[in-house]
Image (cartoon, rainbow, N blue to C red):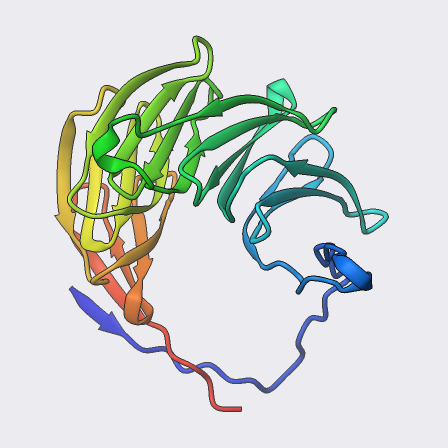
Length: 248
């Protein structure tokens, strides 16, 4: 495995944002306003270009990028949101929250149409839903929680499997009929849609925050320490990068 350090410069032209979308503040007693809630995840609708934000005030917001205005608020979770995904064909968004649930919302009405409890076992009460993913057919929903992975059929609204993991799951994605997942351990895990573990590859970050995949089958895992590990479709390590702060 190779380790690469590529120097970057702050000199040259830099793009300025064309639009700033700022989450609304909540008004309290005597006109006091809450701090602006942070965005923990975003998703974009391919149909109309709307931007969906999962925020720290337990709400999700839908933004019109042409007007820069918030056109819908999704309110119902009891704790801050970790993740959000768009289900285009059904005009829905799905959110995952610190409150331990995932919710399906109607984008046209803003109402919650279903609340999913990925972890029903009382042993894991208080667990959170840290990441979610919807497959290409928009038939399956995968939830990464503090205790493992839960996969649901969006057609029958039934849980297909719950798989316990040795560490909290922090990101996952669908690769056709399989699921790639990373979490608070130095490993990239691959599951079948039925929950069987196909492989577990050790990766460079001691705690992995994000996984992304190329159409060639190559995967990139990013995590703690600024490390990015690039892994081939066959499970071999191609290279690792370390990101670091830039001197201004």
